[in-house]
Picture (tube, rainbow, N blue to C red):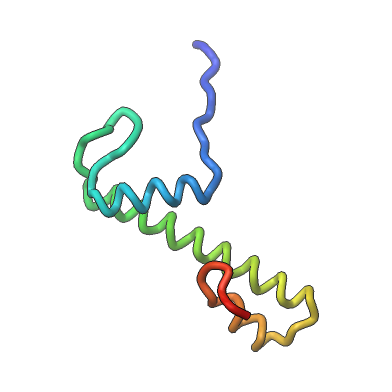
Length: 86
């Protein structure tokens, strides 16, 4: 059996692709390209997108704590989507 290569994307690119697929409800790459997403596959994409949001929030929270902000300030900052205004 030949060595297989792992296909991977940086998380933000995968999330962008998953968001596009969920909006169009069609696979946009791979073996199933052009076929309709099942409810299960759409759910997986939703879960991945939520996970990315959770990771971003946790990163922002820990970053704020390391900068000496209080827990309540860090919590507020972690909930801002995108770069946000501080």
